[in-house]
Length: 385
Image 1 (cartoon, rainbow, N blue to C red):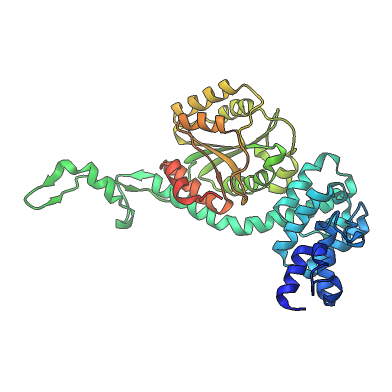
Image 2 (tube, helix red, strand yellow):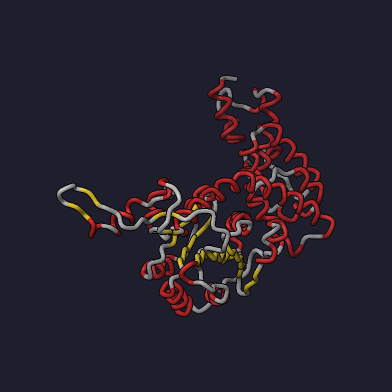
């Protein structure tokens, strides 16, 4: 079969059977297997009833299909097809079977699905589910730990000021010049510094308090996974005191689980309503040094609690000196559906709301630690999708 026709056949599936040179009988053995795997998922209701039977509710059939797609497609495509199968064919309950969990390609979306099933998961599937979640968490930590620690440590070094910098490289020349403008000598066109302003380094004491407050409604699944991993990384840094709170209509403090992000994730319960106001009220009680605190609310802002009180609490936090950041999502998918009225109300308080990708989060933390303009940073570094 001509390569162009082959590609069209695989894209269109059974809809292309009537086109000259595009029938399924003209596909090679490998392509026929690939075509059948695609048809089981995407040809529902197609013209060829034998190819539109789908995966049904048979665990063995689904397990074979999962093996087939891993044979025919790269990992990135497998993950997309698994996500589509769960959404289109309602296969979530089958994921509770251990043999299914051993066959799937683990990714963030699968972890989110497993966490949403946590409350109904039978004991025999729990260990398999934990193994899947740990595999994904370990991979995310491998990707994110070094970049996050480097960005945060560098920002803490730069944010800590001293009038006795140890090295020339530690001098903040812009602030030093501004502080010594009164010593300007016009005839020599120079400034004579009477005092230096620089960066202190290697401070061991806690320099910032960080509170991550995470909406665990079903639409925030990927954000919950990434937030938990980042929370664990930040908690491992002695210069930060990190707290992590998850909420729906209730609030749960999972700070004591930050040493193990897998246990932390299984402490969440995806789904349910949302009471942002209650979550912020609890988080306020965790902040002891407002001027050195960063509060990060990760939510789509659909408030089921008292909206006006929620906004008053945010205003009070910013007035006290807390650096408040609202992330509509912390995931690779871009900006989700969110409450635009609440986002606009927060912006009016000087708290912009935007979606952040995991690779950009370390830079966001560095910006917050140095108390630079968050909105300007987001505009420069986060392109809308």
